[in-house]
Image 1 (tube, rainbow, N blue to C red):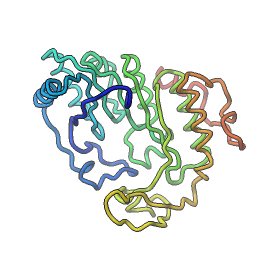
Image 2: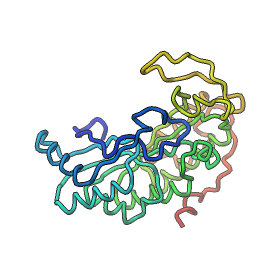
Image 3: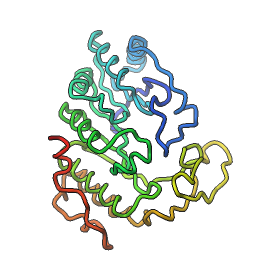
Length: 279
């Protein structure tokens, strides 16, 4: 979707309405300065851009599109009979119930992307993500039931993350794919950044920043030591090989150890964790 078609790029709102995630550069204007518009103005822009470009596909490139605005936009597109295909980035808010997802699909939404990050409730709370695994499960299922594809951003190596939490996160991801709650995902290894709560207050996250000194625009990444966490880079290959299989609807029955060439702990999650959240 990113590369196989042309998409008009547009924002629904400037900045992020949540702006609390501890790994995110929330002190910068493009995230911290939240400004909204109206559905009427947005659909006017959409119609003008379609007229100018001849393209009916829209990628709303928000940090996190607000659910209330997505509902208003969907209703306005339907009311004015504006036919577009669109996708956007969201937070997995409980507001995205079956009815809202159904409405978004009717208005032309075909996909959403969102941060599951580390599939560990302890670390999600530490991140101030504002969601838990159960909520993410139900929300992604609501989208999938309405034929809206879900891409999840995944993270490993968050400060204090243990080997057990990494393996348990992989098990959550496996079950989410197997239950068709998500259809696409990508692992990112955590990096502390200069304008995030982690980078600004490393002691609160039990890490030590070792440089480099911030020297201006686009030099944002910081090196850090995580004395209480696992040796995170060693998991990169196994996590990616497992994910590659799940993306292709394969490998669900393989023991998680199969993906790694060194001993790992067994997951502490039951095999029906995700099924239980859906029930």
